[in-house]
Each structure stands twice: as structure tokens, then as C-alpha cells.
Image (cartoon, rainbow, N blue to C red):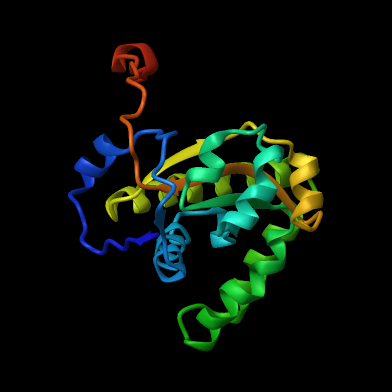
Length: 212
């Protein structure tokens, strides 16, 4: 099996234009834990509401683990052939991260204790709204997912986001706490066939200008 790691960066706009949804991977290429950690670290720099980082990543890495996922993802071949599959979860209890995020800032003198307590109250108030909690988990985890795919592309890997899988079976098979909601799967590997060609709507079709 070939092990590949890529560390060189690419121009940002090149990365944007190169990222495609690849579904056919070389099953003989492996990816190291270190490479995956690097990609996840970059994904974790995505923005989030109150910087609560409403995401968790489950890395399905290895043929045995990927075989377990295969039927849950409706027998998509890319699950088996990819070098790894990363499940992106949204955190329904990201408010529990408040102290971990803000206490270091207080200790370093970058934020007053009073300001931190004010922010904490705002967060707890927001988290009394169940709809907000769910929306925030989806929205913020999706930001990290997009950043993960761009980071992988920059390091020479192909990816594909997958929404087609049985969420309940996934949670049961991989022992996912009710704190987390599965958002998507992302396959990562080396492409052996071009991605499907896609058409993008023009700016005029997707933009409304408000000038007054």
C-alpha cells in the first residue's frame, strides 16, 4: 500500500477552483494519522458563533472501520476505496465549551472576568432555544467541514462530502453520544478518475443587490 503525505501549500484561488467532489479513489493509497491531524487542525480554525467550535470529527481510518461504515452509507464504493472517511458532527451542547474557550483569555489578561461572565450569560440564554441549538450545530459544523475539504485540497488530497447515510445507524454503530448530530461524511484520498463536470449558476442568478 502506498502512503502519501503532502505538505506543500497552494494558492488560495487555485485551491478553490481545484476542489471537486471526487467519488473514485485509489484504494492502494493510505493516509497517515499525522496528515489527517494536520487537516483537522486547520479545519478547527473555522469561525463559529462565540468561538464555541460546534464540531467534532470521527475519523474512520482503516479498511475494517470503513467496511463497517459501507452499508450505513448505502454501499457507496468510495467509502471503501478512500484513504479515510471523516464524519463531521455538530455539537448540540457547545455551550459547555465556554470555560475552555474563554478562561485562557481571562488568565492571559486579554479579557476581563466580567466580560467573560457577560458572554457566558448570553450563550446560556441562546441555548434555552432548542431550534437555535440545532441550527447552530449544523451551521457551524458545516463551516468546519468546508474548511476541512479546502485544507485537504491544498495538501493534494481529493474529497467528497456525503449526506446520504443512515444517521441513526451511524450513531449506533460508532457509539455517538446524543450530544452530537451527524452532519455529513467526507471521503478523502487520491483520485483515479476526474470528478463529474458541474455547472455553476452565474452571479446574477444568485445575488440580490441592496443599495438603499
